[in-house]
Picture 1 (tube, rainbow, N blue to C red):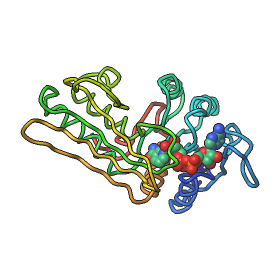
Picture 2 (picture 1 turned 120 degrees about the vertical axis):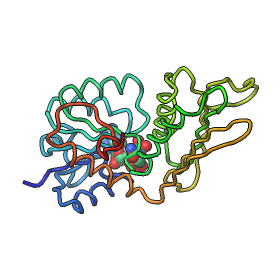
Picture 3 (picture 1 turned 180 degrees about the vertical axis):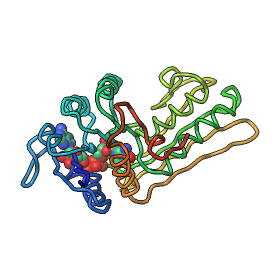
Length: 251
Ligand code: NAD
């Protein structure tokens, strides 16, 4: 029987594309929910989970923990793409992954998934004392969270390569008399404007050279098709918290 995939946030920019990609993948679109509800939509996350084998969630960080609990209670697969989750929200997601397979990724595009792996390798090879890591991103004017989930994922990849915790070395929102840059800091800068789908650059700047990794998304479909690929991959897996690197087999 074809896999039944439900979309949380089906009326959103991502949700509309996700619905199309479900059909393009030969799966069954089991339904959707949105904040405002509406004709043809299911009542809530519980009803969506009941109707689906997998729920793909691109909504708002404020509902991620409630959605994760509901999916765990229903025993269905959960694919989470929402960004801006707090540490407490992420703890709930991690706990839910003891019961169900969850794929949680800040960015479902193959290009960024590879970029994250390269970022970790480069950070391990380039000493923090010499190479200053800076992450620059730009997104459309409607985006509500800063830094972007992908920028944070890049920061975590650099931190992992250096064997440190991102929270201990993160520098974002610089303004005013900040003092000199701290050695080993991972810096974040964000631009917001227009309808930019997503641009990220990771810089390693040293006194004598600079190296940059850049990714530019032209179309949200790169994320939507990746998320549906993740949904189909996750069906039948043992419970656990997976990332897009697991889905694509990138180590
Ligand atoms: P959007 O504002 O266009 O759509 C959000 C959708 O979620 C709407 O359908 C809205 O009705 C629904 N929603 C909001 N609050 C809800 C609630 N309480 N209950 C049920 N539904 C609710 O936003 P978007 O551009 O589609 O992005 C959605 C999320 O996905 C954001 O967090 C964004 O950063 C993230 N995102 C992730 C990736 C990725 O690859 N992981 C890619 C793009 C966007």
